[in-house]
Image (tube, rainbow, N blue to C red; front, side, top):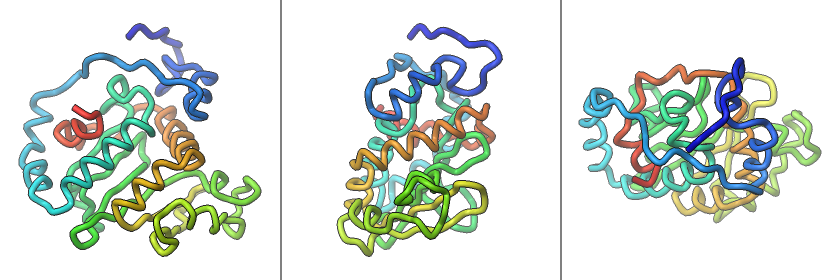
Length: 220
């Protein structure tokens, strides 16, 4: 893929101008991606045992499917930006014990957890994309919309992380997560948040990037 480099810009803005980014957010265009990935064999081997451990979990099939949906819909030019501007970790050793976590810059974007034999997902987005009036006001959260994005309204929850215009959404179950990722307004919000943080510069979590899990995200 040939891309024009914009010197002095950070993140995907180096090769995707803001108009093209906005068109992608709105679903008006598909972005051509690189045909091949730039990969570190040493990095792949470092986390191979964790991938094998994840694949033995009862949630493995759902994790693979949800990551594929997320990669296809929510990350711009994922092969071009892999590791340098986003990463995915496998069974990271954090206190909340996730199965996988996607990061960009210094920010968590998306996390999957075990919930019995099923999964629970967590998304970070801009609060203003999920209020009734487009304001970053917690009391204006569009609860009715959120409940309509999942299979049963009890599957959707939310919280307020620290930071301006920040909103966390939890979704219980693989079926509700698939439905959530199929909503056009939700996709626009996720894409906008992801680009906000990818455009801030290089990913701080490159050392924990797991190519074996990224294979599923990239449908390889």
